[in-house]
Length: 245
Length: 228
Ligand SMILES: Nc1ncnc2c1ncn2[C@@H]1O[C@H](COP(=O)(O)OP(=O)(O)OP(=O)(O)O)[C@@H](O)[C@H]1O
Ligand SMILES: [Mg+2]
Image (cartoon, rainbow over all chains, first blue to last red):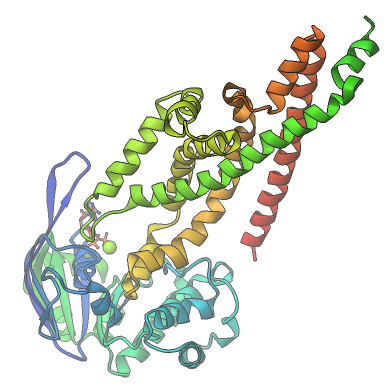
């Protein structure tokens, strides 16, 4: 479904120097897979994720989505993003809109659905995450866990074929992490293709089809959760796991 | 002359008070037209200044907007007014129109900085969230970022308008009888500068005070609606 070829990303720093954040990364993601990316801080996990929907422009390399090269010049990136939802660490709900408006804005403005269909879809999804009673409130009055569940639902309203998660529980109070992970697990069970950057090793173990270890911009190790956690091959991963487990 | 005679000469004789009122009318008329024009020009200039290509490179629009802001901020507004009156719009003898245009263009440069700041103060995540759903930059700007920027810019825009009311005091240069010029004319006719000039100052002060209080009310109302 997604094929990443030789992905490289440099950032230009304020002083004009370049730093390489991702170096020659290759990876294939099949439909229905749940990929969890872990690694030390600053290893480029987030940057990799954001390259997948081109919120960051790769410096070099190619990304294919269902066979279409989305890194090619002239690709309609908005069309691609409609099929690829993203959930952010800081929720990023639209502050000036009610929950219902947050959910229906994109499907309606992008003419994926009419207003009525969008509201029906939103209502059904809000029911699934037990937040239907919040339909008419503004994001400011929601808890972090509620915000993130709404943010997930907002992406789902577009009927995406896959979902990207950028540390979806990192900004939450500990007691709210569970409710968000539960929604993600439900989504995984429903067969959604997912790519998740997280520090939740329990989630990786339980849900991932593959766990990826990134270190200093390199995809250093990749395996099934059992092998990944029980038999880490590289010294770097062994050190990393001994620190986080 | 006694104080009351001087007062009468400045304000009552020949119904002079009417002149101050019509002067104030001209002052406010120019400020209002210029204010509206300034908001329109300023918003467009701010969007131009913030425009980038999909891969984040500046565009020619950036450059045009920057030159506009630089030129306006780098030259005296009296000179801008005179240039508009004697050169650019020399064929027009509608002073109010010329003054409104000149001040509108002038104010637009300052407004563009205000609006740009208001847009930049909106969390970057809002734009990213819109884009991640497949909305274009323009749509996200229109439905998400600009409405939030509005809240940030209303207080400084109010201040800009208040400044504008005072700055129009130079329109006498293009023969408009605004409040300042009226007071000045009466001063030279009555050989008494004190009463008309202080009188005009008091009128400006009261008008500005009222505007400031209204703006404060508006700000408080907006802050309350933030807590919804
Ligand atoms: N916009 C940017 N400009 C310059 N450097 C950046 C930018 N974004 C990220 N970086 C740098 O790129 C490197 C990788 O960042 P990235 O956010 O991808 O790491 P990460 O693996 O997600 O880390 P963490 O677990 O701390 O979130 C870091 O050194 C970071 O400082
Ligand atoms: Mg990160």
